[in-house]
Length: 493
Length: 74
Image (cartoon, rainbow over all chains, first blue to last red; front, side, top):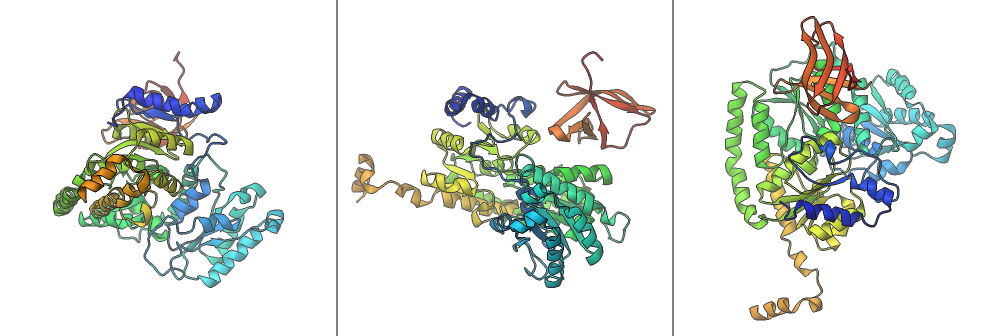
């Protein structure tokens, strides 16, 4: 419970919306709600995946961010050209901290920025020629690349360049995979459509590559990790658990992943989907075309990890199930000691989240393991099905906000007064200046991994480090401190 | 006529997914479900009804099909 009743939360929403003009208020009202876990689905209580109101400060990204930044970007042995003006590629470069193994600039290219650096003349005369030149240059300078993806930025769609034709021509010339991705930023309402477009390109250009090639030796225990972007090493701390269980992880999509792994994914027996939002499309496609079942799992916090491990093991035979129990038993003392250490320091603290993808619901379990409570959550770009899954995870009458605006978020925080906020970099400094501890939950604030048992140790430490940092008591100037505080200091002297 | 994906969940129930609307639901009744005819009117857990052209045999699931909204009268 957030300590607020349903009426209080509803009146808070009402109050915050007061400043908007009628039309905007009516629209925004649909995106804010007090949670009711008993509802069968979220359609009745919250609207999502709708265009942001002009003039309101949204925290969303664009389709290019969803494709280049999220889905394609982490594929390490491909070169991703940010086709268009230089800024999109440069400002998004390396920010997501998708870790990978390899020698950057030789056989892996994730943190590099390749761009066609559009100038006025390219807008006027078209950039297709420039694109073919770039592909040739890439082939000369980085011969160990395993393929090239062309990630369109807004102008490409506006001027109508034919990047598909260039891709086809160059694929024949250099005999490597070249994929055109039509992820112009203006498409859709948020980065979510970028994920979808990227998934569709993978479906059309990548997945069927090895359909008639059975040279890859398979085992009955092959799985693929789908939708884990290896932020701060997340996929690695997930992968070791699966491997200890006796499963063979064939592919990682797409953190620390290679294009060859992705081509081999149709050979696996089960797809494990972590980020449902960005990769459900391809999982559903593989289920239909190749008959590969998929399941969602959650590796945040020991309770959810154990639950998910058992759920995964259930899909396989007894040997895996037995090994799964061994793994759980093995890590038991490790996480128990973490809980014993940090729970007393964090017990009862209240958290507000506003993130994207899977985290607004997935990390709730990890906070609960530490005795903390999530009193408000929201997604930047979720769809209806994400909220279906969220309302069951959240407590009664907790606040849920979709595509929250800068103003609304600040007002909610002022009223709910959480002890910790988890959101993105754009929100971080505002809330820190308001005196509220903050964790940047998109890329784990330069920390991580947070997945699995190993990740939980780091998660707990980070939360403690932030919440119990002595700096929060020093925000008020000494001469403005209340009498009581001064007396207390005098008494202790 | 939205494109819908019909599948089976872990409990063995038929599921109905409309990608465009992010609608996921279980199918509680299906009009024709015999070896020589499959499809017809589908009623979802939510209460909505859709109609798919009957197929000559039960398909292998999941499958993407075209569905219409079934009117109140039929």
